[in-house]
Image 1 (cartoon, rainbow, N blue to C red):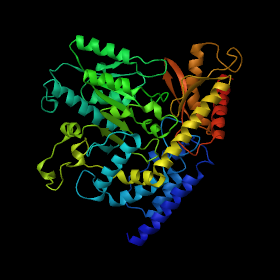
Image 2: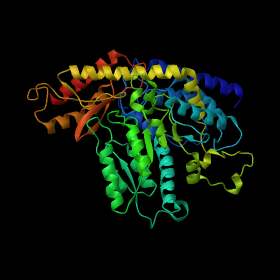
Image 3: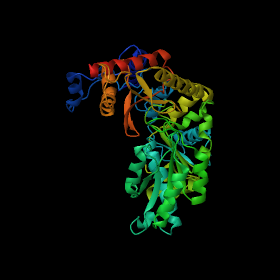
Image 4: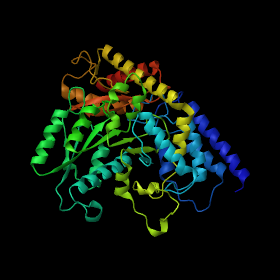
Length: 481
């Protein structure tokens, strides 16, 4: 393949991407693939001979791009998936063209990652000593990285070397979460050998925040039982409702009890950029670690998470292993990124982060986030004003938790009891999705089925909110009619 061949194909690929992004708002948010289209992908035979680039790109345009997840659309309110930032899309191509391993060494991607990790820390106001963080595939991996450091510190304080001896024989280490803590924390606890039964679910108050008094009592019970409390996981925006914990009292308690305070900021930590809600994040900077996702609220193309830690030495103590074939006498005192996490060969994630932040700047990112939180509050107002809808939690960030509750539960529009109401709201997300005009997802909150709308796209309008609610009610009528 010549450079001219590649250049022509790259122009075609750019046109495909541009046309795809430009046409998203005019099409359905998401629709199920028809059987023929699905089989085209599932049953594709392994090719014996290669195909020209123009044929491959034609297949992408015909068989892939017409069937998106939907998250680029302004009426996509599902899970916590953002539209891709255009600057990040373009930077991804350049990063792939370089294709380095960002494990370490003296090349651009390594230095750029150190810069953008510092930028991320500055954006959310988290302390950043040199070496105090790295980019990961997402917050699930960032959580594993941070909790491994917490585990090793606690074991060391108890006279135990986890890396050498494992966990067998030492008293169980206990962590504290809430019922709304993201499932990645449980996965991390299981993977790190802590065991999910040693994650205590602590009660929250009416505002959805972790209750410090309940936490203190749980810690006392476990110490009295001969266990080793070591970790508290707070949230900078729960996935179900967007609730933000009160960090200062939790930090006070963790300092008193010598516990590691980890904050799950995967989705919500960047909310601190909105002056309207910044007060909710007071004390965030006092945490021992923070996991967050630039590929959520910032719109950096997937995948890109980030682990930030107050003490870089704890990360290095948990992960550093430098075999002879990877020695680098010129690495400097920080060493390689591969000494701070689980990955050895690491992709060049930093360029798309750099491009996304540099293109919008702090002020632009703050404006985008403030717009989505304002729209979320407006959606909460619309829900509250509608007699057939019920707002289930205060709108703290940009997630709105609500449900369809017809004003006349005995009439043709709605169910007559709580069980039927639960069944209706459990079915509604899929029904709305199939209609194609809006997309939201569901969850359970306090034992009830809920609808949740997550607003991340600054291109969303108030008209889009009206469409969402109209679709919920229309799908409800179809279900009960």
